[in-house]
Image (cartoon, rainbow, N blue to C red; front, side, top):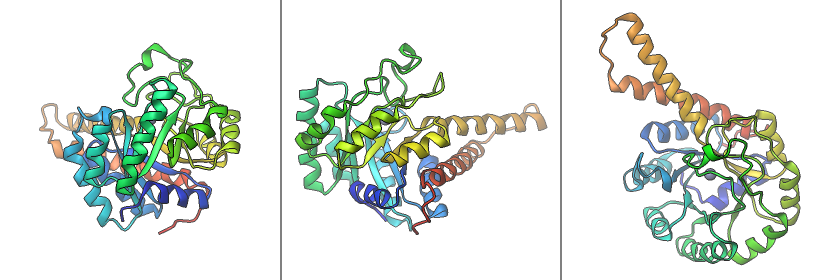
Length: 294
Ligand SMILES: [Zn+2]
């Protein structure tokens, strides 16, 4: 069933767990994420990032995401990830998305606040939950900018002093925090700053979000959840493993017969199977010991 971003993160809050939020710019990913939720019995967030428009236009995949979420037995939120343009956000809202993120983290603070407020007013008209970001993770969701910064040192941690005022000024529902995770492939072991997270948590009363969640150790996931993280964005490593599964499939074909025919559906099936296993594994870790809810 289709669930609002506020309600799905409230479920996470009640159970001291985090909801896996998977970017799904392919039908294989949409199917894998929803099937993983149904098979594990935990809720899931499927999301489309504005910067993935070249992989898959929102106008094509968005209606499929909403329809499949609506008919699922699992609790599924359909979310817009890292939206920087309010006109794009409106299209998602009109399509039936139940969560959106306005990302003004690259803007000066005052502009971030003003645009986040506009986003909140738009979400209110559609009864949609709103995520906003304070601080910066130093690279975009598609990894752009990551090469300039191998350690994540360019990232600007969320300022705990600013967080409560930002929430009050914007009327957001959940807050994305920067505390040491980065988007894309980790080039060094991630070093999460739990003091920043704990400090933010002590001053605000909204669910917190971790971006750059794939590539983090299970122990760090648990520590982050215990410190108040309720949504974990996970993309890069899921598609990396799926890519490796496709490569293994092609090699297996070639090992049997050098000029064997490789059918596309064998690739999509390998990618789907890989993502299903990855998503089930991480959903279970993010559940942090909570009993299945469905
Ligand atoms: Zn992100």
